[in-house]
Image (cartoon, rainbow, N blue to C red; front, side, top):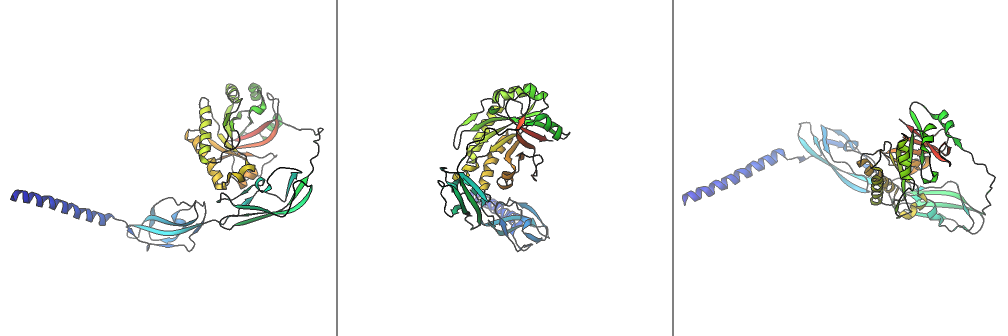
Length: 398
């Protein structure tokens, strides 16, 4: 009996001792919350989608920050921030403070001082003119003033857009409703010879090439190579409208096999109507499935140009950029290079959150686009041996 009692006492003693050791360990290693070791800045307000870190909000700290979690600024409102720091006694402390995420950016109205529509056009003008917001998926967009699309004339109007943070943008414009005229068949079309482009733009730091699709018909890539082109961007496929099926370009297989057979560097692009990240990811997987048998040395581009449908999609500008990111990140996961394709004006106004390489479309002699770009599509009326139709000509920079 005494033996059992001593055993029980021994077990209890072990548990008590373990508890004491645990408590001592906890108190010796616990991280105390202490906001006395640092001084915050007065302004703890940050713009939505800003990239910030803890030290952006701290005026002075007695020690240094040793651990912080990424600060998310993708939703409006107050947000508690927590981080670890070493104080002047070299003790770990947890600091906390609250920031407020706000939106001070006006909506975007894609409109100049005039807009022209043919008499009898069956369109919704408010939907036709791109009206977008960086944060809101569905800002309030309206046209002030009276107009009649069935009556020729000039109408003085104002387009107004307001987002949920009450940021407002107004654009006054003249709406020209005109009577269509017969096309003048005598207008002479001009072309830019590939040989002339080579003479003007070729340097040791770039390459000149083309981008093609089934619109170019049958291509003699041997002649293309002999003309001086060193690379080709090939349309891999396209989406058949919003929520439509994915179509492989009818000439993709022939184009890529013949281009590679003639030692041309190859990249590609997909023409998308994606209105969600999930759909963009599926499109990337469609692309990957069709390019994996081939040697791809240049980037795969996301080509999204359905801006006239943007209003009906009810997505924000950040949302559209996230859709592109979904496609491009999926491409990169499979070890291909990825890039966004867009014209200069859209890059400046729409693709403002992009971190990927850029394929710039700007039809001019000397682009004044100030951002970085990997490829410059400088014309759509190029003429090169081996292709009977017009073709886009591009410069690839090393």
